Length: 108
View 1 (cartoon, rainbow, N blue to C red):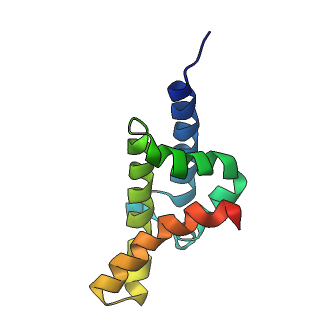
View 2 (cartoon, rainbow, N blue to C red):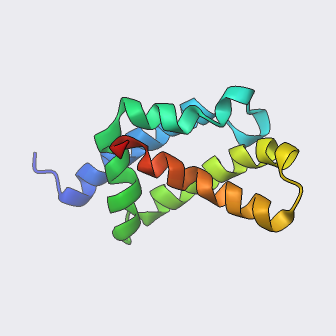
């Protein structure tokens, strides 16, 4: 069976997406551990997450995977950050930073 590059990427991205979903939980049912969970999940599979965040964002047909998980990470982080940050602009900035921190985790 011949597998295309896109099919291979989609399989890896689906797996990585599931790992993140399990790690962070649903935004409506998040736990205090949900905020640091993405960085820990990234450390368990750095190559998969590197593909997810970098390649997934560059390939138009794969971008939806990366965008979906970035949005879930931000939605999960926002309630916790809101308890510490009252300014809406700073809250938005901090919430947007969560996926970037997870994205940078494998290299650190």
